[in-house]
Length: 243
DNA sequence: TATAATGTTTGAAC
DNA sequence: AGTTCAAACATTAT
Image (cartoon, rainbow, N blue to C red; front, side):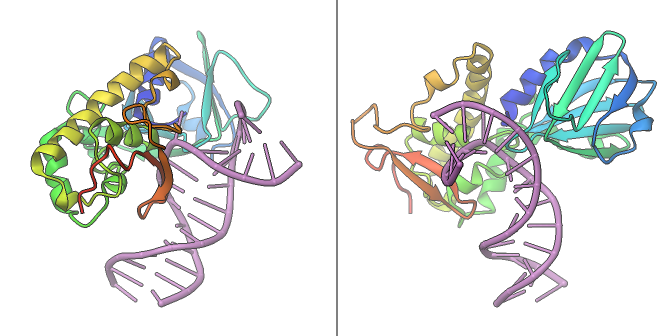
């Protein structure tokens, strides 16, 4: 479920409920649910992997982590963490982390850090990367403070596409190559979005979960890399190791 | 059936 | 006191 593009899809799917009044609330979420009742949704937003339901004076933040899911005008067997009922239908959220953010949503988020946001600022990302020269690029790409919305699939696909070894050190990657990585992180996120909408995301994976490099036919290495120990799929031959 | 996976927070240990 | 890291949590497809 997660990764920024999937949240953008959710935002689009619930758009018909924007401006509508929540007439009832249910679920296991440990928040003051009464607060939502009889309130109109001001807007649905997203910041990276955060799905945001903005109301008057506060915002509900939903994070799907690894296993979260949602259903619109449908339910499943397990109990929802949060259900929002409207006159027009319902939205059910499962297995997610829910939190209330007080006040103006803009005071909580820097939109320029979200690769999917129109305010995305690649120069700022580059500046932040300069501060962490000793980190591996596989960890850096997953830093939500730098690349909000980028997840493990995007990480692997970006690095394969720009031919950079996941264990490369940020400080050793030439500036021009770094710019390429940053640009590809945004570009691939939108490719991800479009392919996911067409339900053909996996078809376009070049490295993630792959066994063989389609460029040179050598094996794709699967390894848990970096401090974050997330799995990386890469070609030792085609991806340059900057160390 | 056991395992692993698109993720993050927490609190213990250093 | 600051950093680091393993554990905890959740669900579903293979």
